[in-house]
Length: 150
View 1 (cartoon, rainbow, N blue to C red):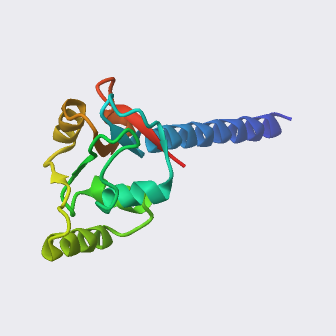
View 2: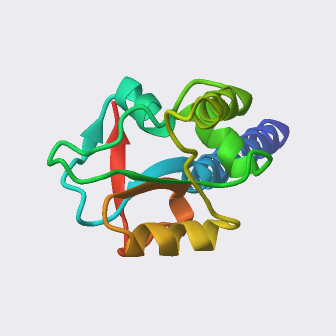
View 3: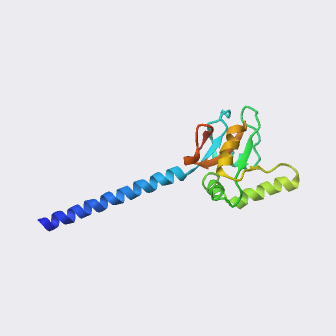
């Protein structure tokens, strides 16, 4: 009976350890997830993935109320930029760059505003009416609004 009780306790402890590890991993993943953020003056709270692609592809240039959209991005090689392109836009970063280059070289558009850090991204979005960008969930504060992608 003692051997079985010991085995049972070891099993329970192992199970509790596994549950703890999984809980920590899922919490960490949730806080590291990328979110689309906008300036608080932007009235839109939900956006389709296709509209988000059009905005970051620099094809959609005004919000529903007619105010200009100001797009901010991190450098192409930034891990958060790559995560954003893959998770939120379902495209590769080089595809975004290609679209921007076509607009620039054809003279029909411009590239988004480039920021050098996630902190600069937050500050620029918070201080630029009509701005849109992206951050890790853990870095988002009350100075910006989260835009939900459907």
